Length: 186
Picture 1 (tube, one colour):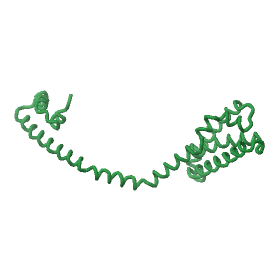
Picture 2 (cartoon, rainbow, N blue to C red):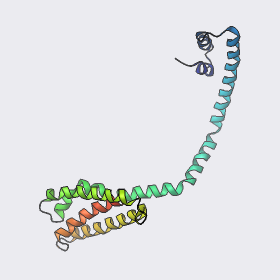
Picture 3 (tube, rainbow, N blue to C red):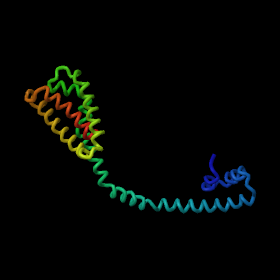
Picture 4 (cartoon, rainbow, N blue to C red):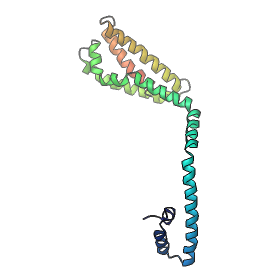
């Protein structure tokens, strides 16, 4: 199953000659292939020694690549940290509990609105990204600002029950989901 080239590189003379005979090559052609095999083997050894000596140059090349893309990498890393730090995963997983804690008596009634807010935010992101006056950056900034304000309102509602009306707290939760999907999620 190995190719004649593979057999030549790995030094299997018998396998190399057997493959050459299978191709129907004459004795002169096989001699030519033997010379070729020795040249391939020498080049493979040179390449192998270059590779083992090139560990430092490989490291240098990797560092150069990291340096040239450091800004983009930092932006992506920061964006992912803020996405996770925005608590969207917990907000979605514990939606009924959060709504119950802010005073909603039947949070299951509000659950479909959570899905609708996700869809609406995603649609705003999809259509707003390519609009010149909106764009990705404005969506991200507006989404981050909306998430922050809604979380502050929800925190106030949880910290001091009764200070924020239940409807305002529930709407803050829904607007949080919307702004997250329009900003970070989009």
